[in-house]
Amino acid sequence: MNTVTNANFQPTLRRKLELHLSQHAKVRKQQRAISAESVDLIVFFGERTHDGRGGVRCIMTDKVVARLERTLGHTQRMSSLQGCYAVLSSEDERTVITVGHSYV
Image 1 (cartoon, one colour):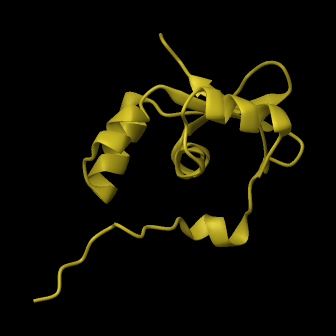
Image 2 (tube, one colour):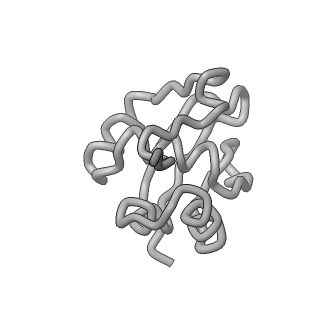
């Protein structure tokens, strides 16, 4: 019996769109213990809004995390993404300016 899992999930857009992390984003990612895979999930699935400073903010809201868990399955890693955000450059939306956790 073959079982299907999402263990090796790769977003389709990842093959087409490669993200570039600024030096600031690399430092913040390490300081805030956010993995590269988590940054990919945040950017590709997060709710997008303009941050008012020339960037696009991708945030993992409750609704987004619930939808992602229904698609990929519930894990502790998915739950930890709630409230995480990434800010992208509005010029190309491929450059990650910073990442972090929203405590609202």
